[in-house]
Length: 277
Image 1: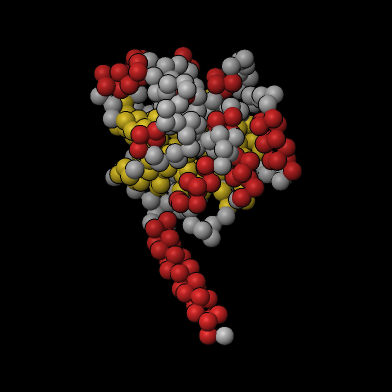
Image 2: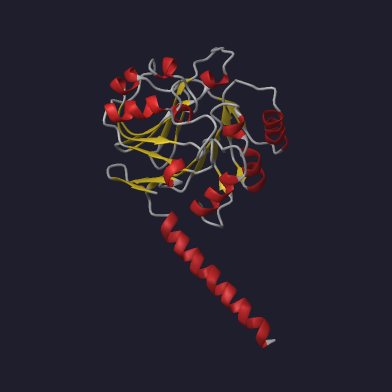
């Protein structure tokens, strides 16, 4: 009996320590934004000061679960808001695993569709789990009780295109003086027409740093203090494109890349911001 009780005791002790450590770490009343290293894809996990969990895209596969398990408390199995920016596999491929592993409270996306097994299976899973589902358009917003606000800037109602990238959600998450610009795989022809805040603290570059996502006008319109590029190491698309890196250097925009440093975490109290990677 004594030999059985010893491992049980130490297991309980370890869980107790982990609980209090994570409770202190993940409940610091600050906004956490994690650009997850999921290879060639996008997955952005956000935990608000009021402990609301948000996921924007899910990468291509189950790598997103590793990011969530690292940055969410082990006892928290609810994700209040999931956003799928558009139906490309490198943005939605991991969301099925998320839905199977966590209780998703709401699923939000755009009207674009794709005749792929990944997209069809995800739609079916959302329906079968009876997850509230909404197709967002410009003007839709989410105002949380901890003063975090998420505004949808694109797509406009009735927009139609043969290119699913052009449907990508453009959203601004605001908290205090901090603004985060999320862009999916949008093209610069669309992005440059959107009315945005004067200054953006963190700008998630469109389409993994593709040359279709930004141009000179983009950086003349958007003043940002940090650009983040989510791309896979040695990816076959050669993202980020050299022309984009040249633009970042030309306009003196500091940037970080998940293919170089792994996951990138931004922590802010709404005034002061720090970057961890």
